[in-house]
Length: 217
Image (cartoon, rainbow, N blue to C red; front, side):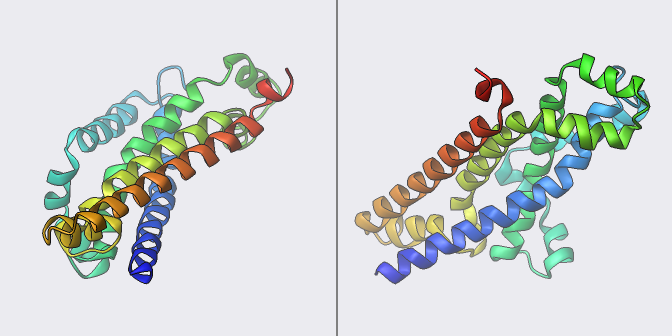
């Protein structure tokens, strides 16, 4: 029994971590593009900003369960299957990347405009401003955003049972709910809650450590 729960926890963590990393690999460039191409950005391009913003907003507005159905051909193309853990990672990345992009954009907007203008006056190019100004200055906000993203993705993982995936969600619903094993359902749910709390608190702590405003008080 313990081995069953341990395996479910590991599968859930695998899905969550891989999905979050891939969502950030896609979401960070999108967030930079949304911020940079805005009329007040460092390389304003209104048409690009409107197109990218429209696509991001459309995907974000689709409920996850519907997005899961709509993007099955994409999963089939990428991982060769519409079901299973790998396919579910594809669905999670598609759903989370636009969310991450908006959080990246929001974090960059919190950076003092004066710091950016100072870097520009010293001859820094756009890439240098992004790497040496925006990312370091927005680090605490980015980490807190990461905590929100990873816990949101973790909250979606119970839906793996819909496509024959594994993890705590599949354990709680297929073995707990459908087979009327309430103990299995409650333990699986409790483990999921514990994982969410651990990830949330850990990333919040890291954000506080990285925040110069708190350290300098």
